Every structure is written in C-alpha cells, then in structure tokens.
Length: 429
Ligand code: AMP
Image (cartoon, rainbow, N blue to C red):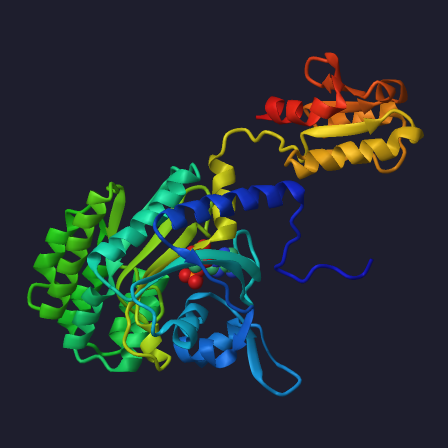
C-alpha cells in the first residue's frame, strides 16, 4: 500500500495501549488524591491563542490551517494556553484556587527523532489562582509522587526562580529585545553562546559576569547561600531567591529532598513569572526532559484579570519509555480470563448465553464465534493465557451442567450452570 502514517506519528498496538492506559490511570489516581479534576479542551483552537503567548515565530512549529470559512486555526502544540482560555471562558467566577488536570495529544512540526514526535501526548495539571510557595511546592511534590507511583526511580527535579536572572537584567536596563535574546540563549543551556551573546548586546559587564555565574549554579541547596552573595546588591533578585528558599523548606515538609537547585532554567517562554522546574530522567538520551512547569501569568496576557497559576505537564510518551526502562521484566498481559468453548455447533447459542452472563457479571470472557474445532479453541485459549475454559457439551447440558477446565493444572470439574458464574467470580477474585 502506498499510504503510510504521517511522519512523526505512531500507531499503538494492544500491549502498548494497555501499558499507556495503566500509566494514565496511575497519574489520574495521584492527581485526584490531591483534589484535581479532569477537563478537556478542543484539539484545535484559534491560531492567535498560541501566537499571542509565544510570538509569531512559533507558527513555524505549529500545524495551522484555514477552515472553510477562512478562520486561522491551529492544532494545539501544548495545553497551558487552552486551559487558560477555558478558564477565561468558563470559570472566571469560580472560587479559587481551581485545580484541574488534562490528558491529550499535542502537535508540533518538529524534526522527528527518538522521544520527539509530531503528535505526542501531555498529561498535566494547572492550579489556577492562590499562588503561594505552598501551592508551588505541592505541585512539584505531586509530580515527584506520580513518578514514585510509576516506579520511576532515576529522576532529578531541577528547580529555579526566573526572578533571579530577571532582577539582574532589569537592573542593567536591558531592553525587551535584549532580554528575550538572552533568555532564549540561557534556555538552550550553552554557556559559550551566552558569552558571545552577552558581548554582542552590550550589557553592563558587571551584570554579564553575574549572569554567567548564575546560569552555572546547579547543585544542592547550599548553592542558595553562594548565590545570595553574588546577587546581594539586587533587591529583586534577593526577593526571588528567598522565595525559592522558602519553597524548598515546604517541599522538604512534603517529603521531597532529592531535588537540585538550578538557576539556569529559563523555560524559554516569557509568561513564566517565578518558580520554574524541569524533571529529567536517566536513560532517555537527549530527550531526557520528561516534564516542565512553573508559575505563570498567562490569563492576564489573554485579557483576563491578573491570576497567577502554577502548572506542569508530563511528556507522556517519554514517561512511558521511562516506565518501560525502569520496569521489571514485563509479564504478558492477558485480555480475558475465561474462554467459553462450545464442543459442537448445536450448543453454540448456549455458549454465547453463558459467556454473555459472565460478561454482565464483570468477568472478562471470550467465546468462539467462528465454529472452531475444540482442539483449536483450546490452543487459542492457551495463547490468550486464560485461566479457565468452560466446555459446553450437549450431554452435560442435558443435566444442566458445564465442565470447568483449569488451564494451569489441567483439572476439570462438572459444575451446575446455575452456579458457574458465582464460581468464576470467586475463583478469579
Ligand atoms: P513543553 O510544553 O515544551 O514544556 O513540553 C512539556 C513536555 O512535553 C516536555 O518535557 C517533553 O517531555 C514533552 N514534549 C515536548 N515536545 C515533545 C515532542 N515533540 N515529542 C514528545 N514529547 C514532547
């Protein structure tokens, strides 16, 4: 066939879908224990929702199109902007803070590679309103808790506060364009390039020197002290550093101490207003960032009142890969527990009847639908790794009975039809 999947997209088969569903369910469970409720937004939005937030340059990365009425629309590249729009449209009057989570696919026109796709999934949370170090710490704790629940051990949470670097640029009177250029270079994490840029933009050499020192600040909590020395003449930066310090106290009260302070996190985008964090997992190569988030001020940019929010998203596909790498040897997942096997054509209706009764009682059941011979059915039941086969034979039926075959031990038992459902429920508990 000539028609292939579009570049950067994937098909998921049974086992993988099962694996993904389990991860999704674990995250749902964790998010809900912290009081988050699920929301859903459309797959496509007005293109302006994304350009307003990130500038026109972003259109290069966006799948956008005109609909039949000439509206400029875009497949969503992320979910923070849609959630902020949803808040403005639907929830502005609701009591805050609002805690919501989402799971959905995003689209970016990027060069596909391992861990980077054109359609990928994000699962994340937004806490709208009620910004405080406590709520920021709770969000980070929840992200870490989710990873623990998934059995991911080798991860690092890097936390920073954009206000520290901003304070320095503000004091140096850096114009917006210079500010944006510097933040974009810091986001790339390349010190050489930062040095070059700082020389080009003619910023106060003292500020330059401080910036270079700050972006290299990555480590344990001790670096807070070191940093406070470097920025002591800048009240805005001092304030941001104290905010970070307070957050770390609270995070430790939540039971998370395995974080790193990283003052070089820029998160590229202008709408982050304070705390920022990224989570990196081992074993994923270049695309090791499995999550990113922080406190942002997007609702005001979109014309709502000033409501600060904190949020994060897991890159779901990278998370799946990570869980797979950390997981124990995978056991084969079976799809059903019981196979109902009609011994001859004459009893097929009775077999369907029994299978349907099982299903209505919540037992995962398969029944032969294509008139296979018994030997073939047993082979297939074996392949499906079912626990029990119910043999439905004419002679037994006359006595109101069926045979239950335990596929592991091979033992067989004649059982009254009346009581076979309850028996299965008890055996499969
Ligand atoms: P961002 O909205 O860029 O902060 O992305 C949030 C998370 O989504 C990142 O930490 C990645 O794990 C994941 N992610 C971003 N872009 C892609 C992509 N093209 N393919 C797969 N995952 C991605």
